[in-house]
Image (cartoon, rainbow, N blue to C red; front, side, top):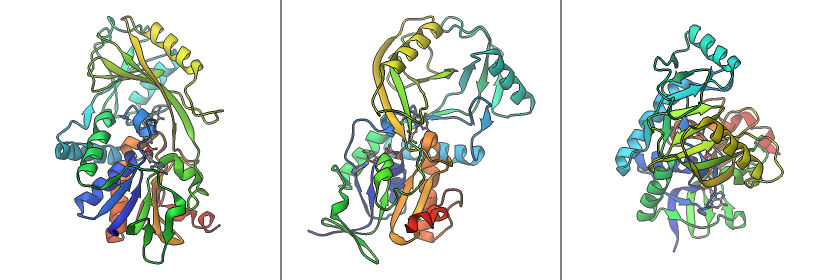
Length: 354
Ligand SMILES: Cc1cc2nc3c(=O)[nH]c(=O)nc-3n(C[C@H](O)[C@H](O)[C@H](O)COP(=O)(O)OP(=O)(O)OC[C@H]3O[C@@H](n4cnc5c(N)ncnc54)[C@H](O)[C@@H]3O)c2cc1C
């Protein structure tokens, strides 16, 4: 039986979820193929959306635009699915050293609107060791991916829009105006397949830069869950009661993608020194962020094969960038609107001709 749809989407991580959401809103037909791997970056992610980044506390790329877009998008999909998909949880930044304290105070004096002095300096004394005080990063959020991704997957399954299987390139036939994959005929195929795109025959030339990260899931019965906490590492509350995500590291070069005892020991030591209350480690996870050399996403249609598209390269910021660029991609597909040039894969026209 031949199945005719507008789009075939490969992958249901953050990118595939948001692309299929915006196509649903536009009443377009699609099928998502996802092999349901147990460990993917979207499943390992903390879900944090943070307006400032790095040791120098600089504003993230397009902070205002992307943050307000993400907040509305998660609220909208959450209302549709009847779940809480996002919560605002300002970040308490416990200064790990005198230099970081200085940087925070200087950035505040320069008028950085997201940084705030925290008047109740002793509020967290019962739970944490922190000798150098703390500041507050406002307008931070947690996207509840542990709830959102399975809820959207179930929605797709109920609508018979999800095929839980491995996508195989050998079965793909590309035509001038359409693609064929087994029984599925689609106008276009859009790859939201994360790390698999690194070896995708049509897109592997793109300058991906894989970045490995590890995290622990920790049970801490006493720490309040109204904030995200930071002291070098991040401690972020999950939806399950008394449960927190703790991490991460950023490795540009690594011998294998698996969990390492080195990270486990380092994270355990860090938690022991930071927390004044008992904790237990429930899980240890590792995954690879689909990052890019120039730290900008890969969005759009293949410059030389208009039936192929990609939404990828979200790096360390998938939670905020994926909804924004999924929406841009849909506007491009349906209304031919321009994709932001920094993200449009048109910029790799020459490389992709090889
Ligand atoms: C430790 C860690 C912490 C992070 N924390 C944050 C954070 O706090 N905030 C933030 O914004 N970002 C964070 N990130 C980054 C974020 O997780 C990624 O940017 C994002 O998840 C990438 O989503 P994606 O949909 O592109 O890829 P993926 O999540 O990899 O999704 C791709 C999907 O495609 C499927 N797939 C691939 N190949 C095939 C195939 N051949 N057939 C069928 N299915 C296939 C995979 O199974 C997967 O489900 C973190 C990442 C890591 C590793």
